[in-house]
Image (cartoon, rainbow, N blue to C red; front, side):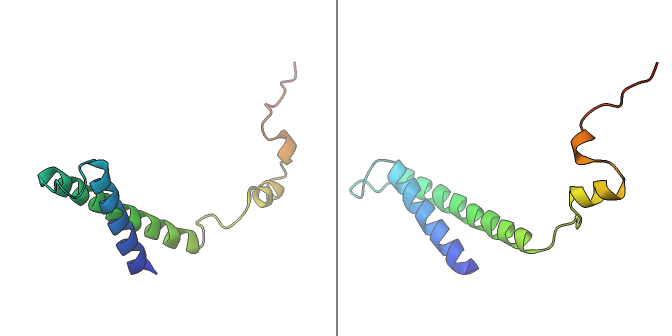
Length: 89
């Protein structure tokens, strides 16, 4: 799945970069090659970013307990945690 993602993102963004030059196939010059290369580089980096994001979501979280469990152990009710304590005079 990961190599397919890298190939598809790279090819799609290279083609998008080529289309954004607005020159078409008849005038294939240095500008269109540069834009296609920059698009391919962007697509490759996006594919890496999405692959790392998917891997990060698959592993367990660093914090294993929910906020409700932590607050229950501290004897703090969830509805009063945002309010300030009232001072007695």
